[in-house]
Structure formats: structure tokens, C-alpha cells
Amino acid sequence: MDQIDMNDMQSMVKAFPKMLVSVQISKETQDMCIKLREDDLGGICIIGMGGSSIAGQYVQALLQDSVTTPIINVHDSIIPSYVDKSWVIIAVSYSGNTEETLASHEEAKKRGCHPFAIASGGKLLSGVKGKNSIILPANYQPRAAFPLMFSTILHVVECLTGRELTDLKVISETLRKKQTQWEESPMAPNTMAEDLQYIIPVFIGSRHLIPVAYRAKCQINENAKTVAFSSEIPEANHNEIESFVGENEHEILPVFLRSNFEDDRMKQRFDITAQIYEDEGFAPLKLGIKSNSRIEEMLMMTYYLDMVSVELAELRGVNPISVDRIMKLKSSLK
Ligand code: F6R
Image (cartoon, rainbow, N blue to C red; front, side, top):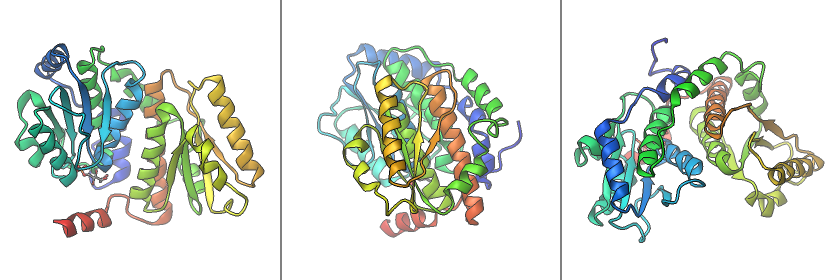
């Protein structure tokens, strides 16, 4: 596998399959999680912001239908009052220095929650050591470190909820093969980027693809430095649908993220929604990628849309690495 160039977003995104399997959680951490579960675990609260928050949302979306332990995600400096000492807090911050994450983690520790930290360095790791932490490889852009964060959070939450650890090697291999075949299906990432170039995309997902739609929006915002939105079905059928009227059709591009695992009712909803948008003059894009499982589908689509965001940056002539406005805001708040 080629070296990853940390100054090149495309190189980082291309390393997605490799990164998915490059961090393992230790036996000690696994044993501790099993013990916490046996000690009557109240719930799991995953905290993080931006590029460090999205992986937790994927894990919640993936597992919430099959586990009985509550899993919540918090993107703020405060945590809900029902999070008490029977909960585990998984604080995720790639830099380890994000204000909101440090604040909510501190609050959780005061309440007696079991603290757990995932970071590449920074203050977050100083209070949480050994089996209660996972140290990520350094020097990535946080959003590009998504596969590292996803695999670690997934395995920690699986241990905490008594599930077998998902073997990510097979998925990693499938992703690696797929990266040479995008042209065949769905389409080359730069072709999709061309479709998004002069229009505002709204990525629309359902169920486990809701965080994938949100990730796509954020990647377009941060990498391609342009406006994008995301939403979800069925909720959008009860409000947003009213905004897709023929007068916005040249400004907005609905991008439907279609799942191989939609039930008949969901299929119908998507098809009818797309038809209504078309009748108003919109030209919706439908994105679906053949997959063997929901997790593979989430990761495959994410990998693909990450590539699209970098291609769009290239078309727009912007640097996908820099996040000047995020940095400016953070330093102004210091
Ligand atoms: C930068 C990025 C941001 C950061 C966010 C939180 O690549 O994606 O959204 O992830 O500002 O910072 P960290 O991840 O260091 O906690």
C-alpha cells in the first residue's frame, strides 16, 4: 500500500480501506468493557464535534435496532441530565483539545460516569489513561481519520453491548477492490462532482444512511468549501417536500441515497418523493451501491462520497485540506 501523504486529502481518503483495519482495541480494554456491561451499564454516551462526531452517529445508527442499551450522541458542551454514573462516556476528539468535548467529558466525570477517550493526543488523553483510552495515529485531518474513529468506537460499543466484534477486514478488502471500479457503478467520482459543481446538493438518506447523508454534506462543506445540506426520509416528507417547488429547481439538486435494505414502504416513499420533485422540474440524482450488509453499504457510500468531495474541491480550485474559518473561530474563542 502506498504511503499516505498527510498534505494531500485525496491520498488520505484513498487510504480509507487501510485505515479501517489499522487500529485494534486491546484485550485489556475489551475485558474492561465486558466488566462494565456485567455491572449493569445504564447507557453509552458518545461525545464529539465535527469530524470527530460523525463516527459515533454511524455506530448508533448501525446498532440501535439490535441492542437494548441506550446509545446517544452529544455534540455540545453539556450532556443530558439522565446520563448518570451508570453510563459510559466515550469522548472522541481527534486533536484531543476541542473545547466542547473537553467540557462535556469533564461534566460526565464529575457525575461519576465511566470515562473513555479516543484521541491522537491533547488534553483529552491526559486525564484518561491505559485501558480507558485509545490513541489514534497522528497527523491526519480529523475528518479524514473517520475510518480510524469508526472502527474503534464500533468495537468498544460492541464489547459494551455484548456483541461479537465485526470483522472489518473483509469490508476493507471489498472497499479496496471497489475503488478501481467506481466508473462501472455508480459512476466515476469526478463525474458526480461535475454534476454537483454549480448547484447546491441536498443529500437525502433513510435509517442507517441518515448519518451518511450528513457526512456527505459536511465533507462537501469542509473539503470543497461550498454549501450542501442533508435531510432524511420519512421526516422530509412532512416539511422539506414543500420547499421543492419549481422556482428552486436550478439551485438545488436532491441526491437520494438509496439502500439495498429498504423495505417496500420505504422504497415507495423514495420513489414517490423523487417523482414529486421531478414533476416540479428538479433532476434528482439517485445513488445506490450494491452491498452485502448495512455496514458495508454505509462505508462504501461514505468512501465514494468522500472521493466526490475531494474531486469537487479540485473542480472548484480550492484546497481540501485547509479549514481556515474553523481555525479562526477556534482561536477567536480562546
Ligand atoms: C477538521 C474537522 C473538524 C474537527 C472539529 C473538532 O478536519 O473535520 O470538524 O473535527 O473541529 O475537532 P477535533 O476533531 O480535533 O475534536
